[in-house]
Image 1 (cartoon, helix red, strand yellow):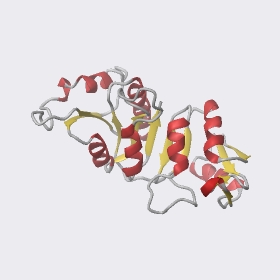
Image 2 (cartoon, helix red, strand yellow):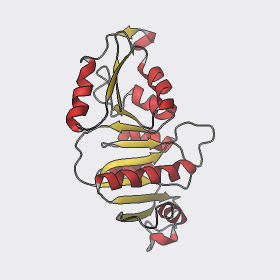
Image 3 (tube, one colour):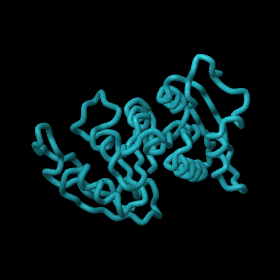
Length: 233
């Protein structure tokens, strides 16, 4: 694990100007990592440059990129800062946006739509649920119409749910909850269930985002969910 510290003059300010960097010594992150996991192999690097550009470049060689939600220069009313949002679209590896280091007990929620990114999100969510020894909740929000049932009597009738569940190993000991809803607001359903989750896991884009690096649902969840979010591509 590598802890990166932003060097002097690295923050992009308004109108393309550079402003003072965030406080803290390079070893601060190293000390925190060692306190959290004493046996972890941790290194620290001092990097100078614009955060979004540097981290996008370094994500090519990383298996996971972890950021906070906002830097010290962000607006306090925002749930996600510009750098974290930018990296969600540009990072080559999965990115975890952390709002709380010690969330309340809950399940790992993965929202699915049948896309390749969604399938990879399921596998990432299953691994996280196993690590945390908690339940995996698989959620699909179906297209809404006035004649659609709010919730079908049996999620086994939802092919997206079954596609996701079939990705799990036959020998898995995970406790899996399957939820399928018809609702006009995909984001609203995900954010509602996110309140009970230790982490929300999403594919970076869905089936209707040709050419886009980040889907509209993921973009909205990052802005409205109050918990930790893992974006997988």
